[in-house]
Image (cartoon, rainbow, N blue to C red; front, side, top):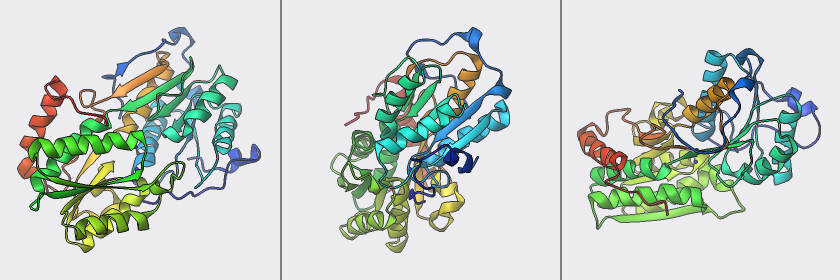
Length: 355
């Protein structure tokens, strides 16, 4: 939920040697949390905590989803003094490879273990049962359940509503687009919120939609060429703003926007502020910020405090888990209007659809 997410490491399938060879590599308490509480008396000393983190496709350096998780882990290393180990996914890998990656971390003394992305759902559920004394967290999935599993969830639809409103307010043609990486329920939340926000501003606005791949093909999160082609088609068909929720494929959307002298909207991180997207900062009018860093740091702090819980922890607008960016000043003229919508969502006056 997103630079090229193509893998930078070999598949973690064979032995503990991979664990040794793999590159070693802000918090909020305002979350809505459910689940069984941990025993605070068993809280470990921070200096003894070894954190294992398994990335989604693209890993550290993707300029989006994985980098946000990495930022939370880095903050925990700096402020909580934990030890860390990071392992990365490979394009087109199997669930068995994901399971082995998690086992390598858990069996290597890393506790807790964090899996980045819903693609780890089945693997986390399986491996967590094998290591009942290890705490697991998974980002963007609430299907993996267990007494030792925390589900870090976000209200992507709420942040997407805000950038959808921004798209409609900035569009001069009444025609905007949405590029989703893979046609899955998680990305449907981005699309639904974007559409609702745009139509709240202009009920008759035209919204073009394109998903790059269908599951089980998750290559749509790591194919900039496909992202560029999809966005080019939208700009050619009259769109002047395109929002991408497509991982590494989003770089292609930015390329198309620049070539068309049009506008684009980033996702997950404040992408206009990232060095990886410096060539495109002039076309990125805003980004839907999904604060995976906040969730990761928050989980690790609670683990150290002995207050970590199982089950969902939801990070929404009210909790500061999602938001929109203002880097570059391109939406300064409409910021007050977007903030009005933001407050209406927080107050409950507006309920944003998820599908």
